[in-house]
Image 1 (cartoon, helix red, strand yellow):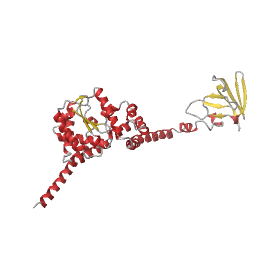
Image 2: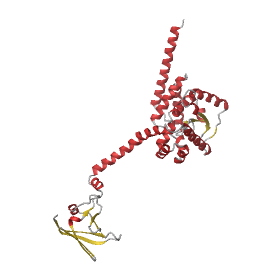
Image 3: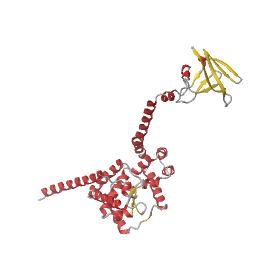
Image 4: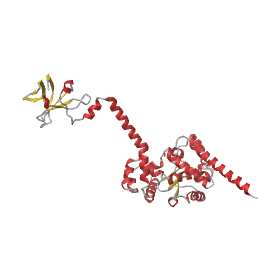
Length: 359
């Protein structure tokens, strides 16, 4: 290897002491000579190894005796043998900024794809393996925590009204797969206003303010039908798993309710303030509309009640109510009314056939 006379100055580290000392590496022909205070070493230039370039950082020249010279980057170093075991990929990316940026963008896309598509898919699979009793135990822990931490107070709804609402509630869920899991809890909850939400395991909480906001038992039944949809699709548990990677791992490994509540300290407030995805809300809506029609109730009630709540909320200002945790959209109202229209059309046809066949 032919190398013109050149010199590189820097700090020499002998590999035995962590302190460097000033030295100069002089190249003459095929020989490299290291000169410094009480230092004069000679090496074949071909036996040196230079670290890869990383931005504008200083580079190391590895010497055959185990020592290294740390010196500023210089074009001359590219003419020397390079260390093939160094950070070659990093150096290659540093030299190609566009490729590095594209790689970062690709990684970000993969992470976002995993969050929006991969995580929900995994959560849906995992929740199937969590026993219902385990899920219910978690729901009971959450309700106990909320009761003892000033979120909830005992209900002020009279016994007769509670009885009528429970009667309608039981009628709605009696033939469903998870019928044995259902429990309706009334709570006075000024902090969250007019609201209803499903806890893991089948407990549905309805606040006094929600009962007072309704103008009929049918409107309350419409809200409860929506929450029943969340229970049947196990949305609360799936939401919890999707929202916390820690909970997802714990559930995958142990499927234990106590472990889940410890793994995610904010489970109670997370579930009370949960804003379900559009997919979850649509699933619960569709389930509710079908359930209401099955029991001779119109989904139109759901649409009108939600619109009235939206008007009341806009007058009172933002608060943590049903529409904060279950955002109302024009599309949801349209679908409710479309379902109601379909039900009405079906009943009209049945009446026509009945009249035609009657003597």
